[in-house]
Image (cartoon, rainbow, N blue to C red; front, side, top):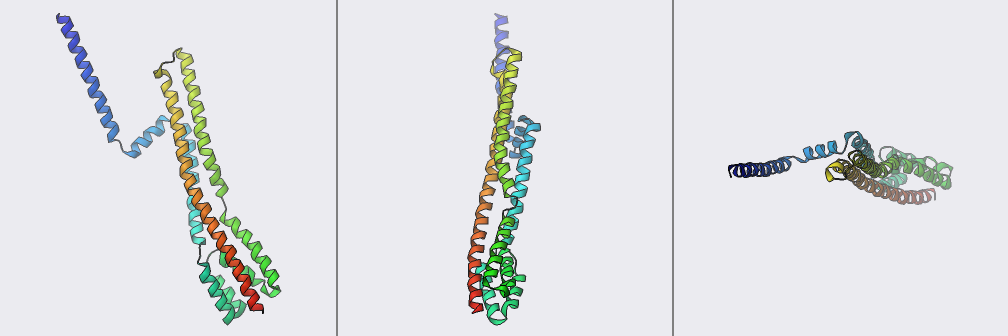
Length: 240
């Protein structure tokens, strides 16, 4: 009877000890900050592979930030610039209009300057210069954007590759242990899921920046085309 009581007592202590340990573990997990949780998941997902996805994120963000800064600096008030060029042509001629363009920032002012520089050769020559230099400025606006789209496509592919590697690892463990219990395959499956999630998160973040950059480029290009048409109209009026 005493042995039974002792066994029950030991079992009770073990049961309550396990419950207390579980609650302590949950409390510790709840007390972890977002940064600590992210760091833990990164390590659990195999740093040697997750690091490649992280490099894609860092390079993609660097390109995105550089493009956003460049595009914001390239954004100008085209209506104000057209009005200033119009006033300069009326009062001081082509040289005064070119001076206005030299003192203005942005691709529109550069295009205007190229057109005004060729106006002595005729309106057609000025129009060709505007169109040609507009293509050059468009190329500068779209610089490195293709690399950003590459990282967007690459991040989830790397994540899926991690999934395949994790599943291969899980099946290797099954083959070695000759057992298909959850404890054997949990590690490989966890790595597979974490790499996939991290790759998708990177792709989502970069996709948001990519869409913003593309919309910004489209807006600037539309302003460039509209302003170029207005410049040609001003040159035709000035030549008359």
